[in-house]
Length: 343
Figure (cartoon, helix red, strand yellow):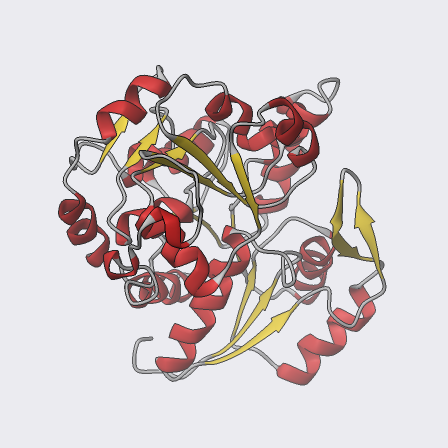
């Protein structure tokens, strides 16, 4: 398959202007696949009538997308179909493939059972897992980011799982972008403890903000919890959404990257921080365990504050060396190898 040029259709409900790990992963994937000689088409909410996602008004989901999506399938005539998300477009693509008897792959990016339960406690996690298990059971292969997530989903009855890891742009995220704090944030004493991500209940940002740490806590991102948390934790610096060189500079200029989430399947931000030379502090859960493990590039502990202080002693150059071994090209090759399992 490596010698073949494929027409690859990727269906995703998560797309720009959203800024999250799923969207960035798919963007990097497309760049690498095109560089490998493949032709890629994305079917996204663009061009469909949309409505705001409940509790996430900035995220819009497609309404009744099946007929328009079927036209995309017919016009592009793909050799391989990948359904990246379990939203309206994902369900429509799944239905089309089953009706046409076309084989397809899926990926499990987000722990929706935990996310849904965190926002709507009356909805039990087993019910959501059952819905997702049925969704992915129709796929020839379901791709997951880490070995621990693969084991976890297997305990929930998921089958036909294959690994699809993530990469990092080591040119964009680099220790060379480190700058004095005064250049971007006056009156912020070191050490700088950084969080980057969506400010929402499922990211557990409050656990980070509650920590008794020296120096300054930096919060990069937007989300529904920002007004509440910014009011309650006035000493923290909420910098809003950052991208590109500005974000890379903040990563490199921070002293520890704190990752309080207990539900992320991977945490692309972990690799971005490490590529910037910034060690990681996190809970010992799926995602951080797979990325950081025992490589000496971060500290994992149930006492997150203790982990953050321990991470201050980690050598920044070891973080960078670790990240350099995780390329997006290797991730894309793993993706196409999984596509081969459908043929």
